Image 1 (cartoon, helix red, strand yellow):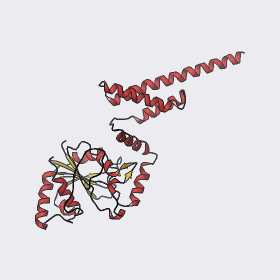
Image 2 (spheres, helix red, strand yellow):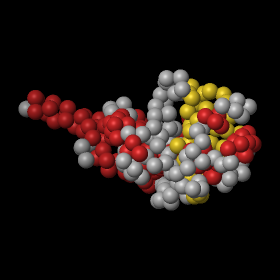
Image 3 (spheres, helix red, strand yellow):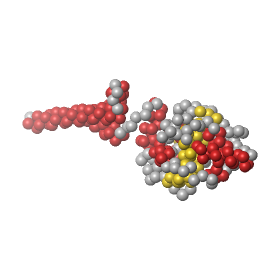
Image 4 (cartoon, one colour):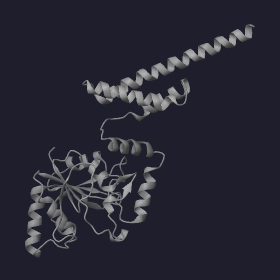
Length: 293
Protein backbone atom coordinates (compact mmCIF):
# COMPACT_ATOMS: atom_id res chain seq x y z
CA UNK A 1 0.00 0.00 0.00
CA UNK A 2 1.43 3.36 -1.06
CA UNK A 3 1.25 6.05 1.60
CA UNK A 4 3.13 9.06 2.94
CA UNK A 5 3.46 10.03 6.60
CA UNK A 6 3.14 13.42 8.26
CA UNK A 7 4.38 13.63 11.85
CA UNK A 8 3.60 16.72 13.87
CA UNK A 9 6.56 17.61 16.09
CA UNK A 10 6.35 21.36 16.50
CA UNK A 11 4.07 21.92 19.49
CA UNK A 12 5.10 24.19 22.35
CA UNK A 13 4.81 21.42 25.01
CA UNK A 14 3.60 23.96 27.57
CA UNK A 15 2.56 21.22 30.02
CA UNK A 16 6.18 20.04 29.94
CA UNK A 17 7.62 23.50 30.50
CA UNK A 18 8.38 24.08 26.83
CA UNK A 19 11.01 21.34 26.48
CA UNK A 20 11.76 19.69 23.13
CA UNK A 21 9.18 16.94 23.64
CA UNK A 22 9.95 14.81 20.53
CA UNK A 23 13.55 14.51 21.73
CA UNK A 24 12.59 13.16 25.17
CA UNK A 25 13.50 9.51 25.53
CA UNK A 26 11.52 6.44 26.50
CA UNK A 27 13.59 3.29 26.67
CA UNK A 28 16.69 5.26 25.60
CA UNK A 29 15.00 6.16 22.28
CA UNK A 30 13.63 9.58 21.38
CA UNK A 31 9.86 9.76 21.17
CA UNK A 32 10.11 10.92 17.55
CA UNK A 33 12.30 7.95 16.64
CA UNK A 34 9.82 5.56 18.21
CA UNK A 35 7.05 7.01 16.04
CA UNK A 36 9.25 6.86 12.95
CA UNK A 37 9.87 3.18 13.66
CA UNK A 38 6.12 2.53 13.46
CA UNK A 39 5.91 3.67 9.82
CA UNK A 40 9.13 2.59 8.05
CA UNK A 41 7.30 1.84 4.77
CA UNK A 42 6.09 5.38 4.14
CA UNK A 43 7.08 6.64 0.70
CA UNK A 44 7.82 10.13 2.04
CA UNK A 45 7.98 10.92 5.74
CA UNK A 46 7.46 14.59 6.55
CA UNK A 47 8.17 15.90 10.03
CA UNK A 48 6.63 19.27 10.81
CA UNK A 49 8.91 20.88 13.37
CA UNK A 50 12.44 22.07 13.97
CA UNK A 51 15.21 19.94 12.50
CA UNK A 52 16.90 17.45 14.82
CA UNK A 53 18.80 14.16 14.48
CA UNK A 54 16.56 11.22 13.57
CA UNK A 55 17.09 7.49 13.28
CA UNK A 56 16.16 7.54 9.58
CA UNK A 57 15.99 10.25 6.90
CA UNK A 58 12.91 12.47 6.81
CA UNK A 59 11.76 15.61 5.03
CA UNK A 60 11.43 18.69 7.22
CA UNK A 61 8.97 21.54 7.01
CA UNK A 62 7.31 24.07 9.31
CA UNK A 63 3.93 25.75 9.48
CA UNK A 64 3.79 29.52 8.95
CA UNK A 65 4.05 31.10 11.39
CA UNK A 66 5.62 28.48 13.66
CA UNK A 67 3.36 27.52 16.54
CA UNK A 68 0.11 28.33 14.73
CA UNK A 69 -1.53 25.06 15.72
CA UNK A 70 -1.89 21.44 14.62
CA UNK A 71 -4.21 22.15 11.67
CA UNK A 72 -1.75 24.64 10.21
CA UNK A 73 1.06 22.14 10.81
CA UNK A 74 -0.93 19.41 9.08
CA UNK A 75 -1.50 21.68 6.12
CA UNK A 76 2.22 22.39 5.84
CA UNK A 77 3.09 18.69 6.04
CA UNK A 78 0.42 17.70 3.54
CA UNK A 79 1.92 20.14 1.04
CA UNK A 80 5.07 17.97 0.96
CA UNK A 81 3.26 14.70 0.19
CA UNK A 82 2.13 13.08 -3.07
CA UNK A 83 0.66 9.68 -2.08
CA UNK A 84 -3.12 9.16 -2.19
CA UNK A 85 -3.09 8.03 1.45
CA UNK A 86 -1.51 10.05 4.27
CA UNK A 87 -0.72 8.72 7.73
CA UNK A 88 -0.91 11.53 10.30
CA UNK A 89 0.74 11.06 13.68
CA UNK A 90 1.84 13.13 16.63
CA UNK A 91 5.46 12.77 17.68
CA UNK A 92 4.80 11.71 21.28
CA UNK A 93 3.38 8.18 20.94
CA UNK A 94 5.83 5.83 22.69
CA UNK A 95 3.75 2.67 22.21
CA UNK A 96 2.52 3.09 18.64
CA UNK A 97 3.46 -0.03 16.68
CA UNK A 98 3.52 -1.21 13.09
CA UNK A 99 0.46 -3.49 13.30
CA UNK A 100 -1.65 -0.56 14.53
CA UNK A 101 -0.42 1.60 11.67
CA UNK A 102 -1.19 -1.20 9.23
CA UNK A 103 -4.71 -1.57 10.67
CA UNK A 104 -5.35 2.15 10.10
CA UNK A 105 -4.10 2.01 6.52
CA UNK A 106 -6.17 -1.10 5.76
CA UNK A 107 -9.33 0.50 7.18
CA UNK A 108 -8.97 3.83 5.37
CA UNK A 109 -12.15 3.66 3.29
CA UNK A 110 -14.21 6.77 2.63
CA UNK A 111 -12.18 9.74 3.86
CA UNK A 112 -9.89 7.65 6.06
CA UNK A 113 -9.59 5.85 9.39
CA UNK A 114 -8.95 7.12 12.91
CA UNK A 115 -7.75 5.30 16.02
CA UNK A 116 -10.33 5.07 18.80
CA UNK A 117 -8.75 4.95 22.26
CA UNK A 118 -9.88 2.70 25.16
CA UNK A 119 -12.15 5.51 26.44
CA UNK A 120 -14.00 5.63 23.12
CA UNK A 121 -12.44 8.89 21.92
CA UNK A 122 -11.20 9.25 18.36
CA UNK A 123 -7.59 10.42 17.99
CA UNK A 124 -7.19 12.55 14.83
CA UNK A 125 -3.40 12.56 15.23
CA UNK A 126 -3.29 8.78 15.00
CA UNK A 127 -5.09 8.37 11.70
CA UNK A 128 -4.82 7.57 7.99
CA UNK A 129 -6.52 10.04 5.66
CA UNK A 130 -7.31 10.14 1.98
CA UNK A 131 -5.11 12.96 0.71
CA UNK A 132 -7.78 14.28 -1.64
CA UNK A 133 -10.27 14.66 1.21
CA UNK A 134 -7.70 16.37 3.42
CA UNK A 135 -6.70 18.84 0.73
CA UNK A 136 -10.32 19.65 -0.06
CA UNK A 137 -11.35 20.36 3.53
CA UNK A 138 -8.15 22.22 4.42
CA UNK A 139 -8.60 24.47 1.38
CA UNK A 140 -12.22 25.17 2.33
CA UNK A 141 -11.28 26.01 5.93
CA UNK A 142 -8.45 28.29 4.82
CA UNK A 143 -10.82 30.13 2.49
CA UNK A 144 -13.55 30.42 5.10
CA UNK A 145 -11.30 31.65 7.92
CA UNK A 146 -8.60 33.40 5.94
CA UNK A 147 -5.92 31.02 7.25
CA UNK A 148 -5.52 27.82 9.26
CA UNK A 149 -3.92 29.58 12.18
CA UNK A 150 -5.16 28.38 15.59
CA UNK A 151 -8.02 26.39 14.10
CA UNK A 152 -8.83 23.18 16.03
CA UNK A 153 -8.47 19.80 14.38
CA UNK A 154 -12.14 19.09 14.99
CA UNK A 155 -12.95 21.79 12.42
CA UNK A 156 -11.39 19.40 9.90
CA UNK A 157 -12.47 16.01 11.19
CA UNK A 158 -16.09 17.09 11.66
CA UNK A 159 -16.37 17.29 7.88
CA UNK A 160 -14.77 13.90 7.15
CA UNK A 161 -16.22 10.40 7.14
CA UNK A 162 -13.65 8.42 9.12
CA UNK A 163 -13.75 4.74 9.97
CA UNK A 164 -12.94 4.17 13.66
CA UNK A 165 -10.28 1.57 14.45
CA UNK A 166 -10.36 0.44 18.07
CA UNK A 167 -7.13 -0.35 19.87
CA UNK A 168 -6.55 -4.06 20.31
CA UNK A 169 -5.87 -6.01 23.48
CA UNK A 170 -2.33 -6.51 22.20
CA UNK A 171 -1.71 -2.79 21.80
CA UNK A 172 -4.04 -0.99 24.23
CA UNK A 173 -1.52 1.84 24.66
CA UNK A 174 -1.10 2.66 20.96
CA UNK A 175 -2.84 6.02 21.48
CA UNK A 176 -1.02 6.86 24.74
CA UNK A 177 0.76 10.22 24.38
CA UNK A 178 3.21 12.02 26.63
CA UNK A 179 1.69 15.38 27.46
CA UNK A 180 3.02 15.68 31.03
CA UNK A 181 6.02 14.59 33.07
CA UNK A 182 3.73 12.07 34.75
CA UNK A 183 2.89 10.59 31.33
CA UNK A 184 6.59 10.33 30.50
CA UNK A 185 7.37 8.63 33.81
CA UNK A 186 4.49 6.18 33.29
CA UNK A 187 5.73 5.30 29.80
CA UNK A 188 9.27 4.71 31.05
CA UNK A 189 7.98 2.52 33.86
CA UNK A 190 5.77 0.57 31.49
CA UNK A 191 8.58 -0.56 29.20
CA UNK A 192 10.57 -1.82 32.18
CA UNK A 193 7.80 -4.11 33.37
CA UNK A 194 8.68 -7.79 33.31
CA UNK A 195 6.34 -8.63 30.44
CA UNK A 196 7.61 -5.82 28.19
CA UNK A 197 11.27 -5.21 28.91
CA UNK A 198 12.79 -7.91 26.67
CA UNK A 199 10.78 -6.96 23.59
CA UNK A 200 11.49 -3.27 24.19
CA UNK A 201 15.21 -3.96 24.68
CA UNK A 202 15.48 -6.10 21.54
CA UNK A 203 13.73 -3.41 19.49
CA UNK A 204 16.02 -0.73 20.89
CA UNK A 205 19.16 -2.75 20.13
CA UNK A 206 18.03 -3.53 16.58
CA UNK A 207 17.38 0.14 15.95
CA UNK A 208 20.71 1.14 17.45
CA UNK A 209 22.58 -1.38 15.28
CA UNK A 210 20.58 -0.62 12.16
CA UNK A 211 19.27 -4.16 11.66
CA UNK A 212 15.77 -5.43 11.02
CA UNK A 213 15.45 -9.14 11.61
CA UNK A 214 12.80 -11.20 13.33
CA UNK A 215 14.23 -12.59 16.56
CA UNK A 216 12.79 -15.67 18.26
CA UNK A 217 13.54 -14.54 21.80
CA UNK A 218 12.41 -17.82 23.37
CA UNK A 219 14.76 -19.86 21.15
CA UNK A 220 17.75 -17.69 22.02
CA UNK A 221 16.93 -17.72 25.73
CA UNK A 222 16.58 -21.51 25.67
CA UNK A 223 19.95 -21.73 23.91
CA UNK A 224 21.54 -19.44 26.50
CA UNK A 225 20.08 -21.59 29.29
CA UNK A 226 21.40 -24.83 27.76
CA UNK A 227 24.86 -23.33 27.22
CA UNK A 228 25.00 -21.92 30.75
CA UNK A 229 23.79 -25.10 32.46
CA UNK A 230 25.43 -27.66 30.20
CA UNK A 231 28.79 -25.99 29.68
CA UNK A 232 29.51 -22.96 31.90
CA UNK A 233 27.71 -19.71 32.72
CA UNK A 234 29.95 -17.51 30.53
CA UNK A 235 29.15 -19.82 27.60
CA UNK A 236 25.65 -18.30 27.33
CA UNK A 237 26.53 -14.83 25.94
CA UNK A 238 29.47 -16.17 23.95
CA UNK A 239 27.33 -18.85 22.30
CA UNK A 240 24.56 -16.44 21.34
CA UNK A 241 27.20 -14.10 19.88
CA UNK A 242 28.57 -16.92 17.71
CA UNK A 243 25.05 -17.84 16.62
CA UNK A 244 24.49 -14.27 15.50
CA UNK A 245 27.78 -14.25 13.61
CA UNK A 246 26.98 -17.54 11.89
CA UNK A 247 23.48 -16.32 10.99
CA UNK A 248 24.92 -13.12 9.51
CA UNK A 249 27.29 -15.14 7.33
CA UNK A 250 24.44 -17.32 6.14
CA UNK A 251 22.26 -14.30 5.40
CA UNK A 252 25.11 -12.72 3.42
CA UNK A 253 25.05 -15.82 1.21
CA UNK A 254 21.36 -15.36 0.49
CA UNK A 255 19.68 -17.25 3.33
CA UNK A 256 16.60 -15.86 5.06
CA UNK A 257 17.93 -14.03 8.19
CA UNK A 258 15.25 -15.35 10.56
CA UNK A 259 15.72 -18.93 9.32
CA UNK A 260 19.49 -18.53 9.59
CA UNK A 261 19.16 -17.53 13.25
CA UNK A 262 16.81 -20.45 13.93
CA UNK A 263 19.09 -22.98 12.26
CA UNK A 264 22.24 -21.70 13.96
CA UNK A 265 20.41 -21.72 17.31
CA UNK A 266 19.25 -25.30 16.78
CA UNK A 267 22.76 -26.53 15.99
CA UNK A 268 24.29 -24.73 18.97
CA UNK A 269 21.56 -25.96 21.33
CA UNK A 270 22.05 -29.56 20.16
CA UNK A 271 25.78 -29.18 20.74
CA UNK A 272 25.22 -27.84 24.27
CA UNK A 273 22.92 -30.75 25.10
CA UNK A 274 25.44 -33.29 23.76
CA UNK A 275 28.18 -31.57 25.74
CA UNK A 276 26.08 -31.78 28.91
CA UNK A 277 25.15 -35.42 28.27
CA UNK A 278 28.80 -36.36 27.81
CA UNK A 279 29.79 -34.61 31.03
CA UNK A 280 26.94 -36.34 32.88
CA UNK A 281 27.97 -39.74 31.52
CA UNK A 282 31.56 -39.16 32.63
CA UNK A 283 30.39 -38.09 36.07
CA UNK A 284 28.29 -41.28 36.39
CA UNK A 285 31.25 -43.38 35.30
CA UNK A 286 33.51 -41.75 37.85
CA UNK A 287 30.89 -42.32 40.55
CA UNK A 288 30.62 -46.01 39.65
CA UNK A 289 34.42 -46.40 39.77
CA UNK A 290 34.50 -44.76 43.15
CA UNK A 291 31.75 -47.03 44.42
CA UNK A 292 33.41 -50.21 43.19
CA UNK A 293 36.73 -49.23 44.70
